[in-house]
Amino acid sequence: MEQDGKLLFLDILLERMDISGLKLCIYRKPTYTDQYLNFSLHHPVKHKLSVVRTLLERSQQLVTVSQDKIQEDAHVEEALQACDYPSWSFSKVRRQLRAVLTNKRNFLPVCDSKLSKRRAVSLL
Image 1 (cartoon, rainbow, N blue to C red):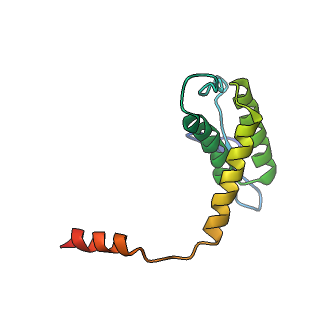
Image 2 (image 1 turned 135 degrees about the vertical axis):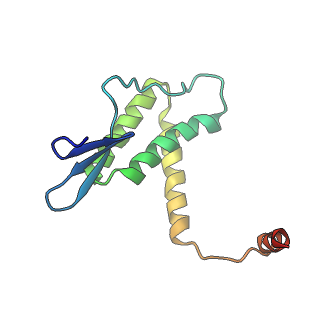
Image 3 (image 1 turned 60 degrees about the vertical axis):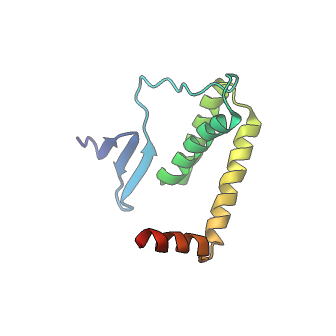
């Protein structure tokens, strides 16, 4: 139910703006604890970095206002540091995300002959 031009949907806060349309932010319930996989626990580093990646990608993909993105990234970093995540983990994930974004911009479609053969065989 919309109240004061705001609508909560899953973990997103949709806010109606005067002229520009909609503003999207990450929403957390007041009882949300910011508990994530602790970095010092015995889990693969790949899993721990995926926690950082998921939260940072979510803010970059969903939040529409750049100031809100900065605040959300700061909140994510603070919450994960409370779970013993080192600063290098944020740097590494941000570097990976920039590389993926750069690769998407430079992507030229290439025909993969093996994939094409597999599709042809599966159609027969």
